[in-house]
Image: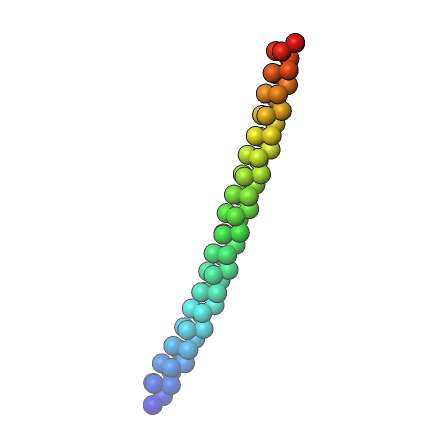
Length: 67
């Protein structure tokens, strides 16, 4: 009976460690997704700013060429 008890205790400890590792991995996954999302958002914002600046530059060039 004591061998069964030791095995049960060992398995309980392993399950606890694995659950902690799973929680840690889930947290890392969420952090990675947040980093990806922020990078994507920054990229989209930079593209938007570039498009606006390009339009303004083109507009100024057209005005300069018209005169």
